[in-house]
Image (tube, rainbow, N blue to C red; front, side):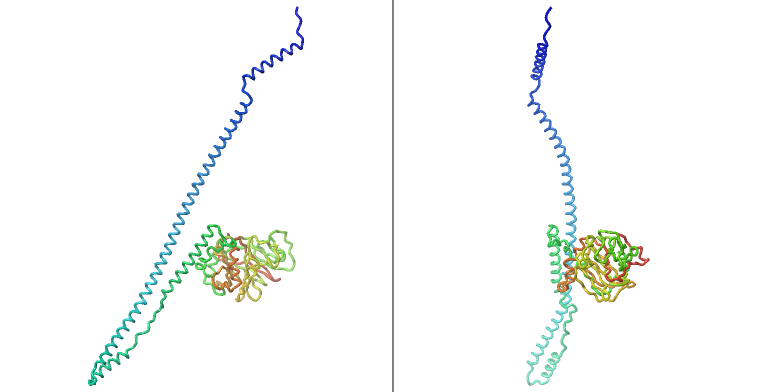
Amino acid sequence: MGHPSSPSRSHSFIKAVFLSALAACLAAAPTPPALCVLAQQAKFLSDAENELEELAVTIAQAKKMVELIKGAATKERERVEKLFAEASEVLATFQKEVVGFIEHGERSMLGEAEADLRWKEERRAKLVQCKQNLENVPSTDTIYFLQEFQALKVAMEENLSPALSFQNELNFTKCTQAVGTVKDVLSAACKKQWDHLQGKGIDGQSSLEIEEVLVESRFPDKPNNSACLESRDYFLKFAFIIDLDSDTADKFIQLFGTKGAKRVLCPIPYPESPTRFINCEQVLGVNLMNRGNYYWEVELIDGWVSIGVIAEDFDPRQSYNRGRLGRNEKSCCLQWNGQNYVAWFGGFESVIQQPFFHTIGVFLEYSEKALTFYGVKDSKMTCLQQLKVSHFAKGQFDSFQNKINHQFPSLFLCKLKPAFFLESVDAHVQIGPLKKDCVSVLKRR
């Protein structure tokens, strides 16, 4: 009977078998560096596939953008070519009219001048003939001498031709000035538009002045202090409903609904609001204006009152001196001070000599950058003041108009609100009313 194996010898045998099997497996398996290469290759292939998919998407988007740009450029080019053709047609028509005007003036005046020339030449020839006849008369032929002398005397005493009476004396010579003006306006407009397209500006305001030269010829200034040709019904087409904003009212202004405002002595405990005036007795309309035309009316019931517009982003916590309507570049107004009207903008004023009107009409032409105040009585509209850029010579000598010319257009970069300043302790205003028969033309914007 043999002896059983010891534990140490069994463990050695098992360990030898395990190591032998592991060596065989390792000999048959790939080496670790090969495993790393395969893993990296798979990762790179996956990343490349993702990148290709993303590029396919972005290429499709880029192609679409290219087509959009080409399409937009083609349409814009067609529109521009059409406008240039129309502009060329306008200039060609103007040229034809001016040339025709010159030719017509030449014909009409030349006919009269040539007739006068022929008369003078014929008279001269007749006088020369009579003079020669008289000189050739023999001194002994008294009767013949008297006859020729009488003929010369009659010829010399004939009435002179009537003076030339051109009704339009050389009017056609003004064509050079007219065409030169058109050329200058066109050149200036082209330069400013080109600068605008290139993004150039002078003090950041060139875009505001692009069309001012042309606007002057298309929309001449309304003369101040004169009756307006338009009837009140014309303005009612642009009637604008205004509601007073209680969140802007100073604590010394009492509101009556959304249409009336009166200055009071005792402060009103309005809730705090970031849009409330705290240093000026002012209140704004809740309505915004940023395009088109707007017309509203205000009744001056009592006291000193200012009516105007203000930029939406104006800081209502400004000091009294800077916060009042028209004492800054963010607002403008028409003031009644108990004696006369005064227009205000940017701290500059223009006194208006007109009688008191119980009702004031305000007409805002946003696209034309113009604000006009009217005195309203029945259906008659009296223009009190128009605030608008003007390049006429008056701006060089009128500090108020000069201020308007330089800074008023920038006001229209903002959305605007109707504004009211109740200066005296008894000041009282009421919005409207507009007559019931005009309600059909009222517009809310």
